[in-house]
Image (cartoon, rainbow, N blue to C red):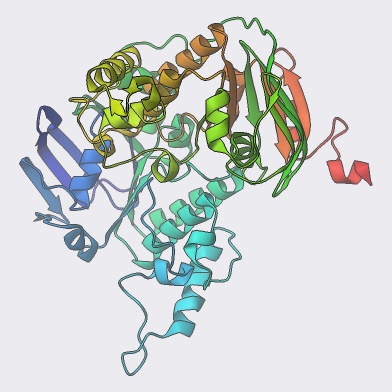
Length: 508
């Protein structure tokens, strides 16, 4: 980074107002070539709004923006793309029925001598670009057949294909394995060498110290501070973000487990093999594994969303395989890992999304009692501190953290005996994480059984009473809270036994 040169991007006094909300208030921001400039802040702090102004998705209500010293006023995303600005959003923007190659070069396909698409060159270049991240996949594979992590890498490869001068990365590692994250960071370092400017948005503060040069902290629509990363510490960033000191990041109380509520016996589904698990009342069980280990398959199998062999019991009663309706009626809830695809109803209101599963509580004689429904939704919005202008607000307009809390409210309203939480804090800010951790602890304290699937090790170690570790569809370790260490969990997640050898080698 050379700040003796003019900034690629300069934004001064940026203001953006939505009905009832000042999203950005007099914000200054700049970006230099060869720099990674991190943006951090709680959900709703204004980061996403700034990104959408840079990308042309929103138009600013005040302030100025210059690109390479020239004033710009983007009226659409096409204007930003024409200036070689690419945004890699957390919520992926791919066409699932098109191939990897078609998605990577969407809008700028290679043409042959007669104007036709040069498919051979298109596939060759796509193979090269995704290969930067260690993906060895046929470029003609439809994107819809890929894992979420692989789709995210395809989205990043698309930015590479544009030879962008500015790349905005919004939570780019939310679905990536540690090995894939390392490859991404290597690519970012190559971008810097070509004097590309990168705006990096992440709630994983440890990543800021691995990859960023400067960091800007947002809070309540304002820029609180911009500093070189080397001049900050993690607790500084957290305090600036939330405006107060968070002394207890994992607000955990002592567990008092009761009777067994959920039991899986010899469960097999897809890559999952002979899986056995119990969850007791008042207990938080953490299920940890690296990407591909099968932890999210378990969540869906227990809930009846995928076919399996074996048996699942709730309160001693078998659940009907392949029937989420039966699971819900008997007291099981599931917060899925992908809130956009199979959690939210994006064009419906906050109220509708909260009450969706529990509508029978407000129904009689074929009618929904709207007043009771509204009152219940309002109580849960207040209890979970969900920030929304009104219950009628479309949920897609809320920040990621508030969307996630609304989905938690959906299940609290249903009052399940056991709640399965799959990546409950993916892509949300540190303040919202603490609130969700406190909520998980409260649910267990009230006698609910909670099963948390997460690929974030500090999270699992911070909130779980018992930790089950998986590798390639099998359980390779189980630890009490007192027994668990980072080294023991990682070894089990890598398929190693206590003597440091791979599980399959020992079995042989």
